Image (cartoon, rainbow, N blue to C red; front, side):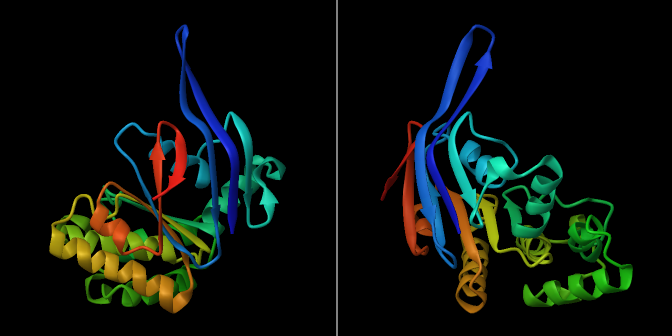
Length: 222
């Protein structure tokens, strides 16, 4: 599914070079449910941005879907983010003035899909995460767990091959967090979606098939 070889990422801050990733290596198979753990500042979010094509490495190689990302032009990178990858974040990032349905439809609008088809597909995704009855509700009318379910539906609506979830249970109480993890596990097992979860929670990592640890800009097996 994806492979990172000796990935580095550095930023220049005035006269100082900050080395965030220092030779990270990772191979993820199709259909895997993987947790990436690490302390704050260890480089987890930087790694996720590179895997999600939101940023590029300073050095090293990254192969996604059997293709090197260096072969992608800017418009192809945008298309790959929209079609291959679904994102789920701790803070949900739902548009406050839009209904749950309209939020889920958003990735399809970027594909210029017809409105009727977009609505139909978005409703199917909301049904999949048990949120169809709340389709017309705005985010401020939903609980934290419900908002995260809508965010997962939005990530799924484009039928991605990979879901990247950054601390998806971090803002939720333990009971709701368990429900969200149940949903991820079900999607992974029932539909074979590859899922990478960035987390600091050992309980979340324990429910994944495999865990790797980010330490000082490098990855190691747990």
